[in-house]
Length: 480
Image (tube, one colour):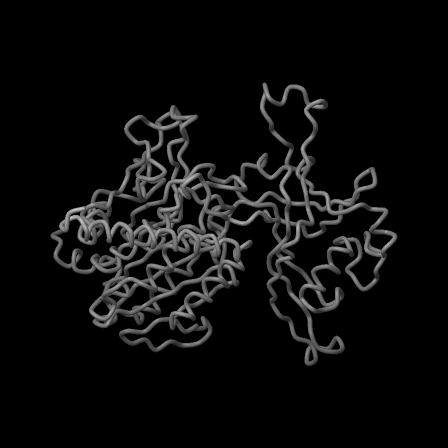
């Protein structure tokens, strides 16, 4: 090996180690985030470990340069910021936005469901546009947020309501498939389960539950006929409270199989909820680690929203006034209108990698490789908010950071419908110049998706380059 090649080999080795570290850390982030509430809790943990302080929406803020903070809404949306050393009110925002929710099955408000036979089931709602066939024959747990009452008596001055997170972790649910002998045409005509009738998961054997007093509604301490008493008891045990103290919950089913680095050579990440926890993890890591904050005139921001998968129209979704209020407060009110045109939003979601078994599903000149780097997503009808100005700025940010790094391009085939993201919503609501990007994956909206092990590192590299180089590029750019 020649002396001249040694630095490049060493750099490649260091990059490989970094990629391996990030892919494993991504898996740990996903495994600790079975619901949007857990994803926000894990995001808080990362931010607080890096010196970010929590702010409250119901209190006034006094901001200064080199300040790091975050605020949450509903426990399922989180905004984090870091003001640059040269920041002042009216300067621009460098924003990366993503979402914390994923398609899943949600327990109904009255989940108790007794079948005609000996099994006890729970009623569920479909959340988002999932590939529901992929939920069959999986070992499922339940996780989410529970409201617990504490204190003695029933008067308002002796009772307190507390939000608690729960993750049973154990496989307590399953949606079994119907045997092919009873559905002979399934392989020829396709599998299209009825969402109301065929997705109700099995919880336990009814006779065994009745014998243990943990069946339907025999325990008078539980809300009658709303949920299986055994499920209430298991959740109460996990939380260290009594079943009667549980008032309500937002609980979701989740796969118990952990995320993992897979493939013969560790090339892949196989995981639930890559859409869109991959983007959340990469954005947060970049905000924490990106260099040059002390000389940055901008305010660096990461916005992670709930409810993207169902249209973003909620108090904590991208379609709400939350972003407008938050950015106004960061720019100290009066300077907000001057800050918006100096800003750029990078809307980060996942993208469709070209599938080796379905290559015809992609337009022939826009076939992102699973390993080819982050994808810039465009759509003439503004299902994505990218334009030539915003794409040029981001391409140049990455080039300045690493001339060898690559970005890919994607447009949907003209004979197929295009999905959308928080990008167009925020571009319209706030007026922010916006670009849509995403790491390519297989199996989007499956219970288990596949990405490249290099993807989190590529995302962190891109978002770090954006935070570092965008303010100077925007300042020097000539626009009409």
